Every structure is written in structure tokens, then in C-alpha cells.
Length: 285
Picture 1 (tube, rainbow, N blue to C red):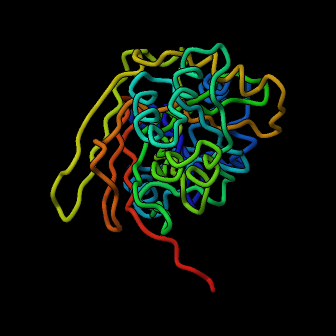
Picture 2: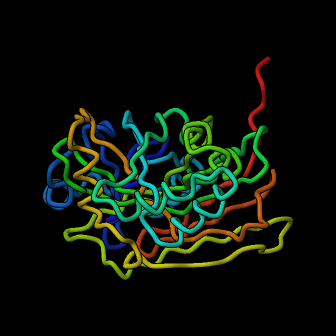
């Protein structure tokens, strides 16, 4: 099942049928068995015709987030470890990424409040004070208040490699700024854990030309999804649940950096495609 948040209301797509669910987003998704609830509660009178539903999903789609915080895990793939070590070689901090990759405790960091999250078709930012910027395609978990994974979505964990590479203590500035995250296009709700063979693909287009296209699968992740969720909830409570980006293995080459106007398409098998355009924050001063 695919659950979309739109300006017109919440839309569930199930077996080719569409339903409008008139429950507030946070109350709807933050359940300990979301799949079963949706299976059992759908009513015939909630049905939407396909034309209306597709219009809502085309013209009124929002990021699938309510009041939840967005967190992220780092260095969960070998390729991510290598990239972090490469970018921090001059600062002498490369060893810390090797050690966290091998450690029992994962790297977890706060990524975004909901009002800074871009949705499908929205603009994500690169920093004006950065010289090396990349998108990071990540399977993203929605985890209920009880600490259980209830759904999956696509995340774009925008990152300034030049800032983090200068000093690991600059991670908050490299990762957290206006429109530094995107989620969408929907929540994918399953009755079983997502397959480890699930494909993740990213392409970057500039002026109509594809500059980058690469893919990986979840089975290349060093840590399990339940392990990451468990560490996030170990000493924190989330009244409305939380989103957790789980790390990336698709990394553009070191001579690539994003530019304003670039288009980033992230595809995850079973979920769909999240498309965003690169922009730069307009100063209010």
C-alpha cells in the first residue's frame, strides 16, 4: 500500500484503488500495526475515482511528514565510509570514519525539523559557503512511537562534503540547513520487512544531460534496519514517531559537485521516484 499526503487530504493507493482517509496525518501513521489498521478500516465510501486521485497526486502532493523529526545514520555502507575518508584526508580525521564503520554503536545525527523538508518536485538547497555538494539517496524509515518500523519512503540527505571534510565537528553545518532534506513521494506500507535486495538508484541531470547514474541494493548495508531504529530509540522518546534516513552507498565521483538547476531523481524499488531541483537559499537580509 502507498500512502500519500496532499493538500486535499490523505490518499491511500491499494491494489489499483484510491481512498481518501479523513484522519490527521500524525494520528493516521503513528500506529503499532499500520498495515493491519489500513487493511481493516477502509470503507467503500472513502473511494476516490482515479482521475481525481491522480490530479491530487500530480498537483497537490506534499512530503509525507507531519510533526516528526528527521534523523539520519551515517557510514552504514562501505562506499560511504570510503567517501568520508577521502574527503577528510587532508584534515587528518579519516580514521574516525573507519572506526565508526567497525564499531557497535552507529553514527546517528539529527537532520531536520519538518518545516525544512522538501517534498516531491520541490527545491533542495546547496550552501553558498560550500564548494563540494552532493545528494545522498537513502531508504528512509518511519518508526512509530513504540520504536517499530511501520513504513518506508525515499530520502535525499543533502550534504556539503567540503565542510564536513574540513573538520568532522562541522557535520551539523554540512548536513543541517534550510531545505537540506527531502522525503517522498509516499509512505510504502508492507505486511513484512522490506526485501534486502531492494534496488536504490540515483541520476543527476544538468541542462537535459544525464551526468550521473548509479544504483545499489540494501543488502550492501553493514547494519540492519531494526538495529538502526533500536539505537535511535534507545534513550529518546518520539511522541509522533520519527523518520530515520539509513545511509547511502551511491556516491558521485570526487570531481562532481551540484549546481543550481540540477535535477536529482532517486528511485527505490517498490516506493517510486523522488524528484527534486537544486537551488540556493535566498537571503532575507
